[in-house]
Length: 138
Image (cartoon, rainbow, N blue to C red; front, side, top):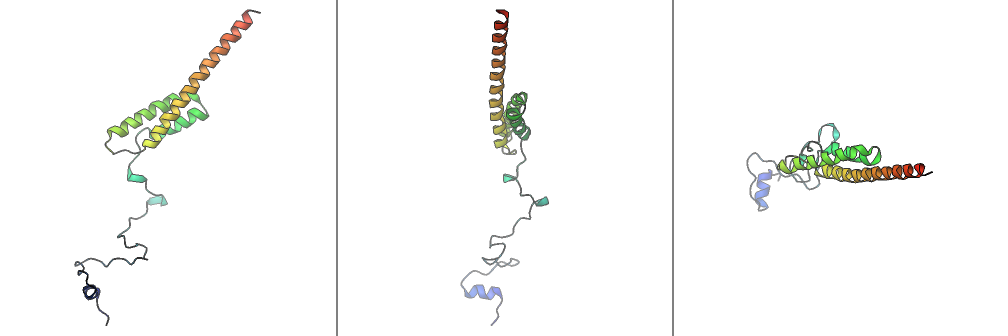
């Protein structure tokens, strides 16, 4: 009564399998019946979404934007510029580059950091003017 899978599929009413094909994996198997699985990425890390490399300048824009807000305000204008450049590279690449989120975040952080730096410079100049005016009138 043990029949090969070809005869069994014909008895169940399904079409015979193609020559050289493997029978589908059962529903509870590791493949889940979805076909061959791709091997894991080297080093145990998952592959980036879409598999696209980041645009040149996307990561530096993000890093400079964070540094511009947290440590050194002079980094902020460079983050803004780097983010704009990376966004332009992504737009002209035709889908070849990824990292738009990092580039945009770096650009926005650079804008915020630049505005804060300009306001701080204006406040410093104002304090110097007020301080110089009050010391000369004494």
